[in-house]
Amino acid sequence: QVQLVESGGGLVQPGGSLRLSCAASGSIFSLIAMGWYRQAPGKELELVAIINNGGGINYADSVKGRFTISRDNARRTVYLQMNSLKPEDTAVYSCNARIYTTPKNWDDYWGQGTQVTVSS
Image (cartoon, rainbow, N blue to C red; front, side):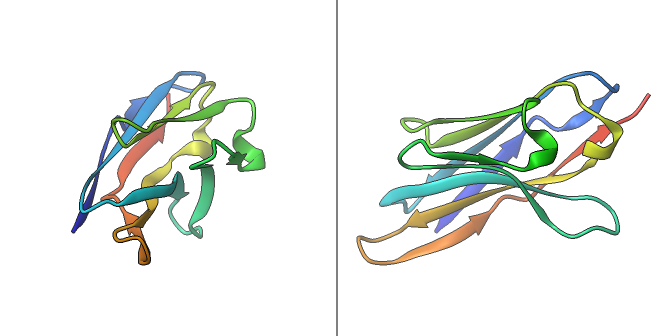
């Protein structure tokens, strides 16, 4: 059993900052990649940022230069620092982790989601 626990969402004014955290725990053999997705009302789920075991990072074009993803392997935690937030960043942000639970078996796991609202 694997759990992902997120924290850090909330309400912020345009131009403000928030930091999201997601900690993985449970039956983890190794982490492959961790990332953040978001879904705004009436829109599809989209990748925001992802970081793999080798440190490789990808960002959605819409957040490049504003958001920074980082990872603490010892704590099995991924962070998303969000700066210069815009109203269009408003969404439910969900943490995703691709995890080996045994040396041969991996699966994708999701957090419960945290609301980020950017509004004046």
